Amino acid sequence: MLTAYDYPTARLLDESGIDVLLVGDSLGMVVLGFPDTTHVTLDHMLHHVAAVARAKPEALIIGDLPIDTYPDPDTTVANARRLIDAGAEAVKLEGGIRQAEKVAALTAAGIPVCGHLGMLPQRVLEEGGYKKKGRTPEQVEWLRDGCQALVEAGVFAIVLESVIPEVAAQLTAELPVPTIGIGCGETTCDGEVAVVTDLVGSYPWFVPPFAKPEADVSSSIRAAAEAYRRRVQGP
Ligand code: KIV
Ligand code: NA
Image (cartoon, rainbow, N blue to C red; front, side, top):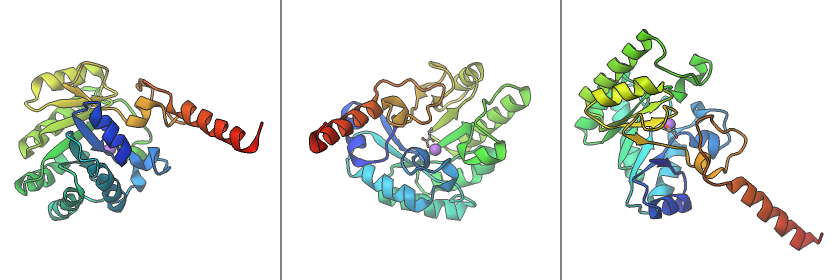
């Protein structure tokens, strides 16, 4: 799974055989220039989901429900429907037990749901940073209970973010749905997700420690712009 936020990137990733395109609320940071994902609105998401959907990818399109758009089951279903109408085929939201009722309402409404547990970026302000999860027995229990609640509510997969590798592997072995890891160490989960700008090196100002860039797009853009400037202005 890779994130995608626009038409050309979605088309290129799809042509590369990526299984799932996530229109993540990470777009708040890597596309819109906000400091974190707490500034993202449903309108932002709709705009970008629609752009990705216009690529008509073979890949599954998942759209994130941003912060404050899933306060109760009815609002959650109404907002998720808008993401689906914009072209998402499934939605993702953050959290475990406290989201179970909303996930159940979504699945009952025929909307496929992907869970997201571990580090929850929409709660970064309360938590005071991006921290690893699963270091204490209490955290492991919280993760396991959260996963269980999501599974019972009907999620088809769970993203695990920044869960220590041993715990991510344990949960992956226990759960009946696929886990999709980010920052959990490689090969501990059933699948992997990466933020596309981390993968292609197009957002050089913040690169998470677990990112493995396969390209250096920011250097290519700077070099192309400089070459253009020289050509137009003269040396
Ligand atoms: O918004 C996002 O890109 C995500 C992934 C990091 C899982 O939620
Ligand atoms: Na997200």
